[in-house]
Image (cartoon, rainbow, N blue to C red; front, side, top):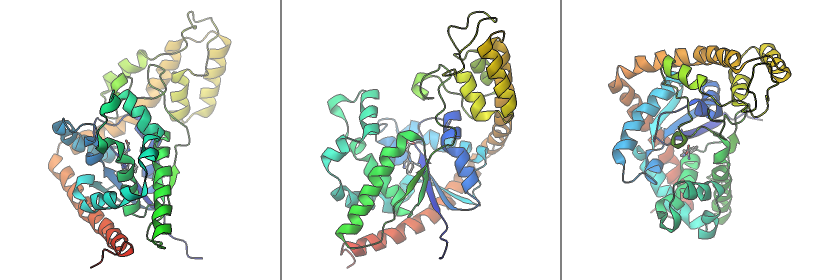
Length: 334
Ligand code: TRP
């Protein structure tokens, strides 16, 4: 059997700088995949506008920030095609064709979209563009014939909708143009916020950003939520659901050391400050090289934008090929 190389596509909305949650959830996987796979990473500016259409300057400014985060964590533009969504017109043509394959009712029941409508306070005034972004995301993925999509858990409904759409398109036109994909989730699960909340989220102010200064990381770690019942050092502390330990599990390479800390903490006699001190050490070791590389790239924004321009040219070629095949299947090849 011929072994086909996996094609990877994923992306982020440029609405803020990327944080440790992104790193654990997806960025780390991308850095690992880039050598063995054909990888596309997209800055989803058009999707970002679906709920930020009134703030185009914010979206525009974060395109560079997100690109800097990518380069800083080690996404290598000679191995990964990094591009800007709005520079790929084929995606929007595909979106319009794909819209025929999804019912309004199905869109209304996408759990992530439902949750976002509540979070963003849209109520009844949710823009149609926002309601259909899962279809646009299906176009993003299938335009590149992606087989693997490294994302956080909240994106699983998008992957499911993409595959439904792909099957429905192929069945309708007796075609095999589009390809189904699989989500690639992080091995260590979701990273909670520094406040102990379910996840890091810009709007909750509980994030450690990849570009944060060493001082700012130190402050955030010191202020982290732990076990509220752990009042005195000699008290036994709770490890489960304690974000300080969840972070150690995600980042500390010394597994035995973490186990020993956990046992001591649970037994009593181990203060929060000691655990936080270890966590800070571990996080600084992860973040220091990222911060340095980010600052280096940030000194030359023109070259960074040039990387995106070149990536967008390559991405445009790939997506245009799929569009031609899709139009052929839809009898639009006059
Ligand atoms: N919805 C993703 C997010 O909010 C961003 C995104 C857009 C994406 N298109 C994609 C992710 C395609 C994976 C594949 O982070």
